[in-house]
Length: 510
Image 1 (cartoon, helix red, strand yellow):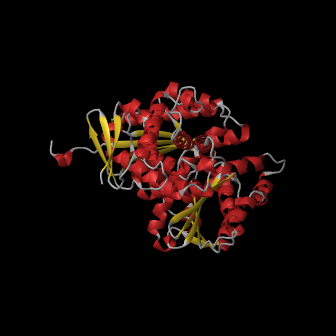
Image 2 (spheres, rainbow, N blue to C red; image 1 turned 90 degrees about the vertical axis):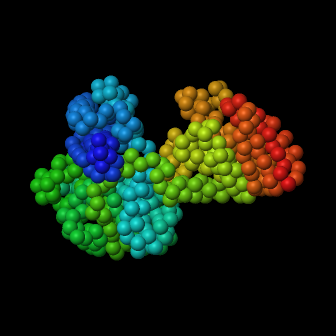
Image 3 (cartoon, rainbow, N blue to C red; image 1 turned 45 degrees about the horizontal axis):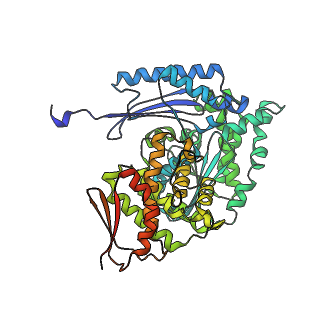
């Protein structure tokens, strides 16, 4: 067959969202082949009853079985690695989340990953980077990006295109809707009460940003971006605060039937639209923003496309993650010179020994963060500081890392000294075998890097790594006497030696 006519490989993504389940099929060039979306009541169930009802579970199963049949028609196996199925993070607030996930697994034969706050932040960051690239002027300003989600509102604050802070607030579209619905007042009164309810939740957000010179504010989210052309005009993405208030008042004055008819949307979206607009209006007003921006792009299709992209797909994202880890390290007053030297050596070891350890790029990012933070526990006490490091990292946020990833970073940092991982260690013993080996491999590289700067003087800056049968040779080109490093390596090189079966030899090369 002519190479020009070989069909491109197809990718598929399914998002089990708060109010709908969507499917996107694309080719390798990123071109859309098929897009489908069907309504569900997940958010309504979770925030009104605390669990997913049997009828909603049945509906979700039916939708996924239908999507599976469509994938089969396109020659796609739902179990292929190029198919990714994710679910909204509000599932974690449902008392029967495990039952729901297991039902999908058993009935539909699908493996579903529930998105956590770390991955949601990463996805929103990727979307925001595109927005800023499309609007160069905003990339030079102080820009606050606000994502009003079903359960929480996230903010990403950029200063001249670089992430300054990210926050998560318990102000959500469906959360607000259900709390208002529980009041003993009619529908019209309830919607008008939205403003008071939302404003009562904004104290922390206002406190976080009242001293900042915010020049632009962008609101993103499924409901807002879906209706942006009708709300603001097909050729406009920006409007004044006064116009946004008028739009919000108009939507809140409608009942659900009016919203469905006027905007040609389903009832689930109609239910979510008033609080989505009210949240945006209240935040813009609280921060005294005269102009607001709502992108006209399709939120859900971009979301489905982004979940296929790996963590290493964006160098800017990696830089933001490691900058967040470094900010935490500085708060804990780590020895900056030592932390940077250990990090540089650890990353060099990772690159030079790639054929040996066979770890993925995400493992390199975890090593990078753990290296920067490995001695942050000294902020609490020098004694057992490796355990304190684990505690600090485990109970901190690192931008763009999921909670499971942060847990791995904490373990890797913990094992930079003293005992290597043991099955009896808490947290480590809860990992499955592949993850335990992943932690051990990464930690073994960190231990070597730390041993090579045992003096905390960063003197071993120029290192040459050479692999020979049965041994790893480390040449220190600027060190005349490596006695200190050899002594340190006796206790810290054991994990690497046990895993890879290689003896470690240090050579002075002056």
